[in-house]
Image (cartoon, rainbow, N blue to C red; front, side):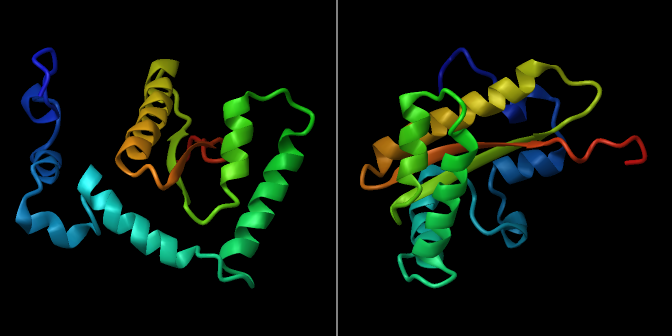
Length: 152
């Protein structure tokens, strides 16, 4: 661990439940499918790859073709980077996976938090590409703009 970082557990900010999850306590393993570490991604890639293979029909390649077609249409009147174009193009291939983050709008958080989430997702895609070079990873940012009423 870098010497210039304080772990979540040592920060004193998070609950015991969160600390137990981060410490991968055996008692909590029944509550989640896989802990998000690089080793677990290998199993996740196999599982998700089987769900979205090139099988055709309403599954696999057909879903990917629809997704790419819709994204290309949405972006056709917008100037986008080469990386964005490549990411959209990569989604057609069965060896491409998305890494998604999102943010629900609320009154008391600033832009730094969602920028951190976006940057972390982009960096995770790069790290996964290094670890699993036979796969492509596309960062996705989902903005929960329709869920911001005061009643909640």
